[in-house]
Image (cartoon, rainbow, N blue to C red; front, side, top):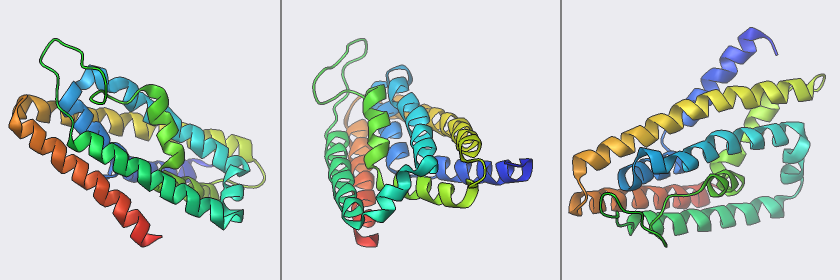
Length: 202
C-alpha cells in the first residue's frame, strides 16, 4: 500500500471514527455516567475490536456476508435489537455516588463486550466491507489488511479517547443529578434513532 493510499485511508478512518454513531454515543454516555477511567475498557474494546474486524473482512470473511443475503438481514436485526437494548440501558442509567462502584445494569461495557459489539454493528460492517473493496489489493491482501487495521487503530484510539473525555467533561458539568439523567436519556434516544435509521435504510 503506497503512502498516498495510506493517507487517503487515514482520512476515511478518521471521518468514520470521529463522526457520531453508535460507538461514540455509548462512549459519551459512559464517560458522563462512570467517568473516564471506568470507560477505558469500553474505549479500547472499540479501538482494537473494529480493526480486528477490518483485518478479517479484508482477508475474505466479508465475502461470506455478501454471498448470504439472509445472513446480512439476520445480522442487521440482531445488531439493531442489541442497539435498542443498549439505548434502553443508557437512557435509564443512574450514576453511582462518587467513590462507589455500582454493579448490575448500570455499569460500563467491558473490553470484550465492546469488541464483540463491532461484529453486530451494521455501521461497522458497512465500513469494513467498503474499506476492503476500496483499499485491499488482491496481490498482497495480508500486508494491506494489516496496514488498514493499523490505520484504524490510530483513528479509533484518537476518537474513543476524545469521546470518552467529552462524556467525562459533560458528566462533571452536569453533576450527578437530574441533568445527567436527561443527558443519558438524550444519548439513549440518539442510539435508538441510529438503530431505527439503519433498519429504514436497509
